[in-house]
Image 1 (spheres, helix red, strand yellow):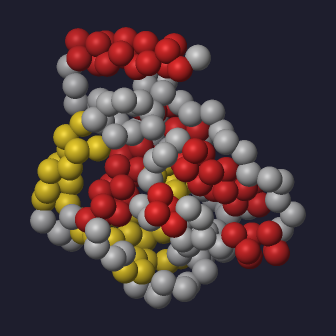
Image 2 (cartoon, helix red, strand yellow):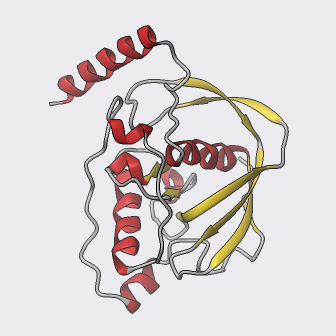
Length: 201
């Protein structure tokens, strides 16, 4: 797993979710696990709107999303997956080993530029429980986004983190791993997911 390289430095507070600063500077409620949206929920196919201002509500939502991502054993989560059609996603490829969220990324209004060669990637998705899909990605990207302090930042990401960023960007654009499937395959997929969700209850 390659190192991810923030262009402004790994300790830049607007690159990672800063839990200590979050509690020091605000009065948040405890984080909560948000209900996930599953395929074929229409919000997963909706293009997300930019966030005009980084408010306390957006910071709290980010914190909730990080917890929801971890509880679901994911390494990325986009706002539409929790019912919000806004340009926000979180990512953390290291937490399964680290077991804390102090290095979780938060991306607000992101743009992504591919700068690496194309690779094949087998991906799962919290909105498609139990499914795996093969996707074409690039193995390195440059990202421009806004951090939780409201300031812009740039970074480069490689390998797993680059794939996660591209996957979550697809969500913000209303594209999912099922978007290029035939209607028949989508229907079969819908039935399989509904069955898995019923068996969870």
